[in-house]
View 1: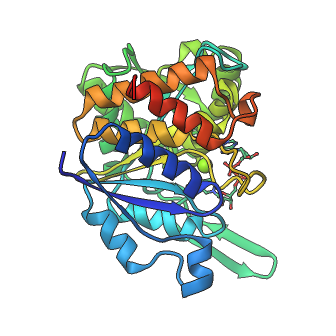
View 2: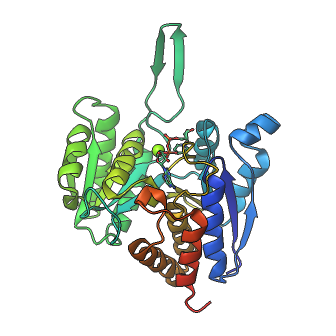
View 3: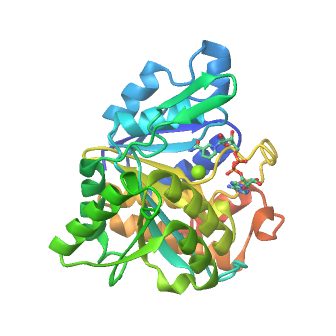
Length: 330
Ligand code: NAI
Ligand code: MG
């Protein structure tokens, strides 16, 4: 591989977990180049901007980006970066692993979250001291390409169809347009759809997650539901994600900077390492991606484990164990 991967470690546990992912990818010897770029709270404190132009330029020109997490400046960093590469879908798989204590071990679901608009479109106003408003944006093109992506990938998830989550009974224009567009695309592609109202979905996935495979949802709903699913499978340290655009993609753990455990060296690197596996898959190295996933599964099953999973291991212990299993006999 000759690809260049931009690495944006960010704040808090971001640098620890991205270093872990890079170490695992480097251990494969696939030959891609990693280039590190600054962003986040510390960068804003030092340089007055949370997202330097060089970082945005690198993300838009690299073959892929591995992102850690940024703190209070998340809206000033990750949202513009997703926009810069026109990342119209946020792919968030949530599954359980042998050896990991999960509330719902039967969970195996992929959220396909609309990633460009909804209530995250940035149209907020403070009208008076006591009144603030937010304009929600829902467009047919955004829902259409999300749905097209979902229909193209429904087979990858061994799914029979897609679940469309919305709240069109209340937000009849915005979510009505979203629902109608997604369902129309699915019908044309001959993909079965089930519609579930957002609030009811929250209960149903807790009670019986096995009924869901591919869940297509608006932006905020996907953000919240994927964290909910993290709770079902054993925690935020396990969930990777991909922000996919037409020509570029940015990969990041679903979690944030975890200030409560930052600088202690005990963050679970699994989500970031699995995001690295998604990078490899995106760049066409399926075999290496699967090797990383198998190594992660093996370590989750036998340990070492970080404290969030009930263990006492450090980030480095887990990373080393994954590297040993990716390349047996090293
Ligand atoms: P968080 O995801 O950082 O942490 C929530 C809980 O999960 C904490 O108890 C944390 O210790 C635990 N956790 C998260 N990742 C973990 C890991 N890898 N290993 C072990 N435990 C882990 O969410 P929180 O606390 O709401 O947000 C903290 C900061 O992160 C905020 O400033 C927020 O803006 C930012 N954030 C940034 C995101 C991004 O850069 N894409 C995404 C989400 C939050
Ligand atoms: Mg989130």
